[in-house]
Image: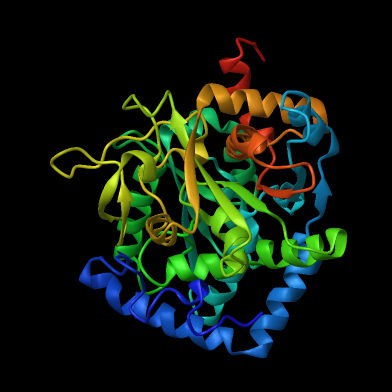
Length: 411
């Protein structure tokens, strides 16, 4: 699918900016390796051998294409509480069926191939909910590379199943005890490690954020989600959807779904941020709803910050959404009005989690539960002859301890 000269899909520019957002704001030590990475990525995109290797792994190792599934009982559950004639037909893009149980593997496969292409012999990554850590450890094991995963100590405590999976795969999981001991702090430590080990180390960033070319590169690898969904919905319904919905922390699963549809004006898009205990409180992770532009982790984007510009601590029941920033392309899409972003609280996400379990027999990740609750909020704006696609970006095995505690259950 070729973009037009004035396409929204032509961002970023050569310096990595999406309008006023993005760019490279890093220590001088990292500039040469980022420029090398940019050159390597441009060359790989033009190399049929790289494309064939990526496609083969996506098919035979990851298990793509992931299904586009008509969520019939969830559709009916929404319609039962809405005025007659309202509520769209809901499809799930089932990324939780990928190898490792989430969308993260799409990006990790692409980046590990780049690492080997660049002659790097060690892999590092940051993780919050642990799904990116598991996917990184998986590809490192597949290609025989040593791997170090930085993870906030608080996230380690609430994501024990994924921590154990990383260790089984041979990764060294490093607890991060600074700050709030969550995703932001893990990314800080990963960047510090990278600065000290630029010669042999490749940093697989897990979301569509960080310094250029990471936001573009991660988006491109994750766009397989949207390209597949586009072909699948045309085959199933003979037309494009009316609405796309995805959760947004850093924003990789959302931009992966949204990007191939950006030039289709008839397709509305809804990104769901974590509103935590409410946008009226200081305990949320909704950077677009409650933040201002600033610089963090090598790029300019919307951030949660105080009046002095100091980064505020984010909160979400979902470790994967517990981040005080957002990918720069989402900041740009928010400012130009192409994508609408809204917040969903912890309580609302828990309700969406339970509804999905009981209507579809699918235990979703808490990240996806936010998207389900967000779709519930707008379902009444759509007719029954309209179509919504929700990116079910991960499975909820990792979250059962968190959910049990929130529901007062003891495991």
